[in-house]
Length: 270
Image 1 (tube, rainbow, N blue to C red):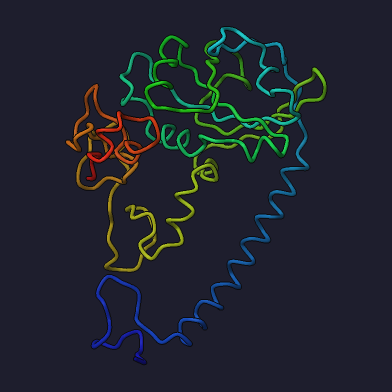
Image 2 (image 1 turned 60 degrees about the horizontal axis):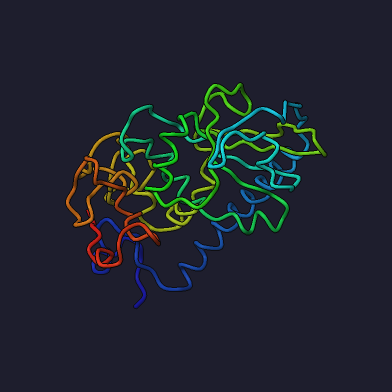
């Protein structure tokens, strides 16, 4: 059926206009011009990153992992490049009380095999004490290497919530790049896919057409409620919204090894 975007007989409130395929293709092609320009600008920014100067640091600085203290140089695992995510930490907080944003980032970076074959290692650093970090990593089911950088000076330690890149030349180590805030988003592939959908991320800050659904406001550190994004939903194994010692992020209940097999079918949805 051929229709116009404002045809009241075919319009669906709160959804994109309904048009024929040719009209859609024209609009799609117009947007593609902007997307290609965005891609090329991204390529130019990446090229500029590769031309940044670098800062030498002490590769013998000790970080603490499952095998005890090791020199930072060991995190390269013999490779020349290293990407780390610096995970925020709240001392003494229960597992579910750790930073939701960092928790989500760490989940999306659970496997680095494609970085590894390109000569890049990956690790998560956190300022938490190892005796708190180790049970948290086990509880969350993370598979990437974690290390405590408590009391270690920047750029190995320092502020958390960053992606940081390092380069190794023999026994010499250099800082090459760092980003934080929304600059961390490339790790979270779910956000990029949501940006392609008609409802987007569903968050209140987005520039959405009138009538589109708003799923939630970002409310880190609060129990699951109505207007929150899915990465802030918490429930127990039976799907009951809770903010206690048995809760975990709802989307992560079905990850491999998260719960006994018999409870996998009972994970909760908000």
